[in-house]
Image (cartoon, rainbow, N blue to C red; front, side):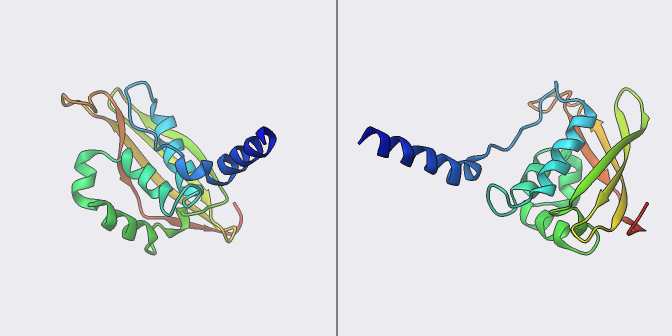
Length: 154
């Protein structure tokens, strides 16, 4: 009986475990490169835990000023599924290169290989949130450019 129950519990967590994957929240210990990586990793596996989990993970690290223009969340989901950003969803690979930084702003060049093995480049900017409150000193995304197509090989 114990063996059957143990087997059932293992199967339960293997099958349903990803559905309970936790969304990471911003904190002041997460460096700018890691913010972008968390967002891209989420988008790469957009539906791995549940539908649009990667988009919701990306939303968590969006700067409040950015959310004013891209939100609410349902509108943000529609935007990411549109022509300008859909190549980020379920992409195959990405590379992140820092191209500018100062004490409050870091800009990255991000190259994404989409699900059809086509490459796209984005400028991805994060800023330190300076206002008081739970996000104070957290790095948050303030801008992601429209994709620039690089073709099927770089």
